[in-house]
Amino acid sequence: MILLSGSANPALARKVADQLGTPLAACVLERFPDGELHVEIRESVRRQRVYIVQPTSPPVEAHLFELLLLADACRRAGAAHLTAIMPYFGYARQDRRAVGRDPIAARVAADVLAACHIDDVVVVDLHSRAAEGFFSMPAQHLSAVPLLADAVRSGAVEQSILVAPDLGAVKLAERYSRILNLPVATIHKTRLSGREVKVHQLVGEVRDRAPLIVDDLLSTGGTVAAAVRALLAAGCMPDITVVATHGLFAHPAEEVLRDLPIARVVTTDSIAPRADMGLPVNVVTLAPLLGEVVKRLDRDESLGDLISHG
Image (tube, rainbow, N blue to C red; front, top):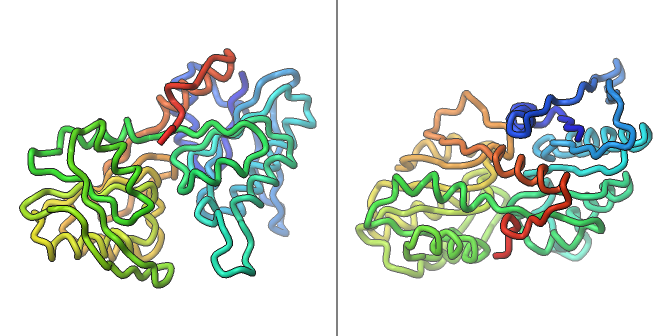
């Protein structure tokens, strides 16, 4: 096999390579003076299965186009099969038309991957399962829930309760509930803007309980902040854990979360973590999961027990 890394998350790619016991293939990613990206694969990929590790994290367009150029370079060099490993798939939240004259950006992103003759994609905890159907090639939709549940298990107490911060996270919270054997509370909210959220109702008894707020994505922190305020108003313990597969931490997430009684934030390295955040962040690596997927894909083995079904 040939394992390549883009610039979005080379640390994760190196960990996957370590799991597989194979080095990362040599490639060059550089900018011309006019800003254009230049890609060059420095070793033969002819008749090989190539796996490109490149989450389309911010800046989404730059990392997506870089993935496309890597794929095109491999295809033109005679690669037999191309798999894009995108633990974070940018634009997954834009899976429908919200106002009637806007694009379905998730479909557009999936279409350009197909245009570059990518044969398989590997994604983790898509924001919307509907986005899985946008890919014209096989999409291996994995879940980080078992890894994250194991990470929070030791910190959970008898009074812990799982909290879905909106209706979209209810099924996710139920999956955590089956693993951790904890009750679930649900918050009904309305999004006012990209940063503002209004809570309408909290369903479930959280008084004197330690909340575990679970979601697939932590972006600006607006949803989490609104959930925390609603939970505190309902009498929860000031010992709150936030669990999210993808830690974007877009501005102003750090400032928003720093002022809240959050004991820890547990996330994965689907997006390259920053070392300068003033938050109690615990990062769980996806490398064992992704390494196992690559092994099975390379051997044409089933991924049934690794695929997200919830």
